[in-house]
Picture (cartoon, rainbow, N blue to C red):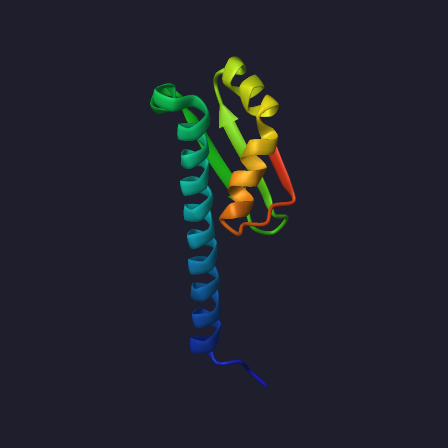
Amino acid sequence: MFKSVNSLITKKYSKLLKIKNKSFDIEKSFKRFLNDQFGQIARKISYSLVYNDKNGSLIIKTESKIFANELSLRMNELVKTIKTADIKLRRIMIQ
């Protein structure tokens, strides 16, 4: 009746690795998008990405309103860049 503790830990560990890899892929594709769209200015932009695996959402947090507006205008290119990395997201939010 009781499940093996080892199998539970293995399942949790593999799920965490999958989420970590997906977060790394999202970060890498977002950096590629920034370099393609903004060039040298992309290095000076401060932002943070928060990926939620449960509901498939990505939250982009930035302090600059101008950068947030530019991201919202270039959302189609961002979605294309993320799709080329075979990442499926339900929502992308910019704060």
